[in-house]
Image 1 (spheres, rainbow, N blue to C red):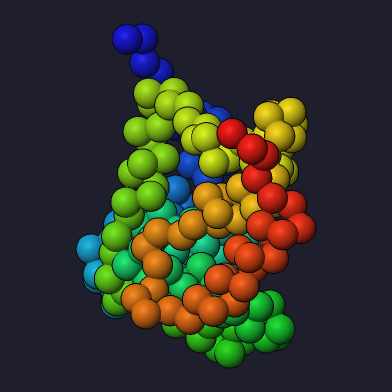
Image 2: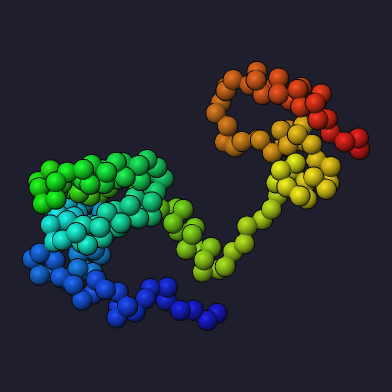
Length: 196
């Protein structure tokens, strides 16, 4: 298998030639931010966030872009609402005056929050496997429903779709199903399955 590392050469990364407010290599602070968050080192994560945010507007944008990616990539299913929390904190930061402590509070809160979140990166790991193996999704039979050309050409109906295409798993135990039962009957009357 021929493989090329999916990371651009450092000469193509503009952050390798930049430094932060204290003269640290920008690409290393960016990397340290993510590693500290991954390992739950909240204090160091906050210090990295402040370092980037204080440097200039471009570094501040780099910080928020990286925090958003970390929320999805590393925290993942450990705290599925993390991207929303980070987005809200970013909005708060944008409303605060540039160069103020208020603005830095949002950055430090986001970095500390992500460091303290439980981590479950299963979907980012699946993404990497899928890309490295060039995996292709399967199309199950229930996807060829009334909403697709193949389903319409096969004579699939709204009843067929509702019976098989709306099934959910995992389903909440003891959920209310009276409306589902009514819909099954309505679709059976309005758009019944074709005779076998």
